[in-house]
Length: 129
Image: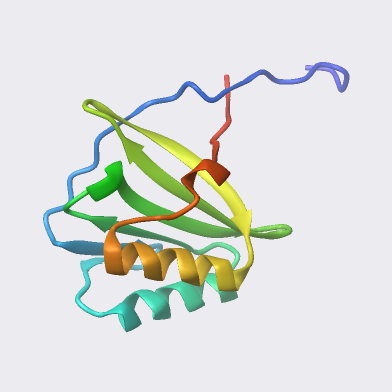
């Protein structure tokens, strides 16, 4: 592909719905386990802030508001936060770039309520085709 050719992207990518056996589960590069306390999630988020190769995913068993999980990783320019929004059959990813403080707020809100406000500020994730 020459420098002048641009790779095509799509936002029309659907994933299978995620099943979460525990009320809340945390996954990182190093662990995948049920969590009972916000501090466990918070510690994993702080680890992600310090390690550019680290990610964090918080999944809930009860996808109220059709949001099954929130995940994040570091990118140049901030933190990429993605949410998995379900319909009857599939999950679609939406994302936004935010600060560390915003990321903490998003995860804490989701941990406490299975809700994320301002979902309309998230954009569909683009994938190369």
